[in-house]
Length: 188
Image 1 (cartoon, rainbow, N blue to C red):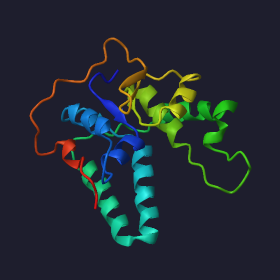
Image 2 (cartoon, helix red, strand yellow):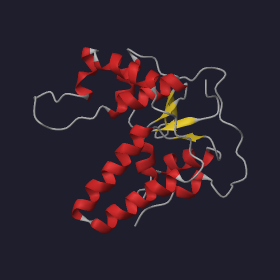
Image 3 (tube, rainbow, N blue to C red):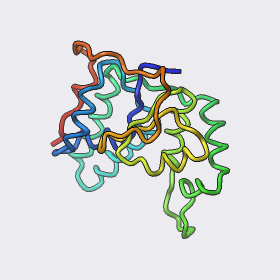
Image 4 (tube, rainbow, N blue to C red):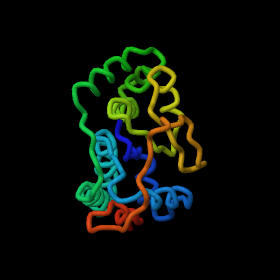
């Protein structure tokens, strides 16, 4: 179990880079000490895809967002690997009928579905890292079939899935040069 990390969902990181981020999300993020944030590879995918999409209509904004992702990854964030264990668990998730909507559109349209939330959940489960998300509904649906090691919503300050009693975030320390919190700023 990774007792010193919290896995930030795309929704939390997206909120952190908004021009007017939600106060409760900011307060939560600034309470996480240096070296305690984990960002799963599917979150990186979603953030970069969002930057590319924004760049279609506003190339400068797209570049700013992509640079923000690059700069975030240069900080002390931990990127847990998407290893064979994660992929095997993800394969099991893909066979659960209630979770099929993560990969298939209900109307059989050609709309692309990537199944990022199940992969984020699989990273969380395999590596034993609780998730922080502003959108807990999909993760709760996954949790019904594949128990999460914790699920926290900074919007309401509630643990929707309590972490194990031995999980903890370290005490807030002094910021260092690679402190990920320097990335919690609005992007113009």
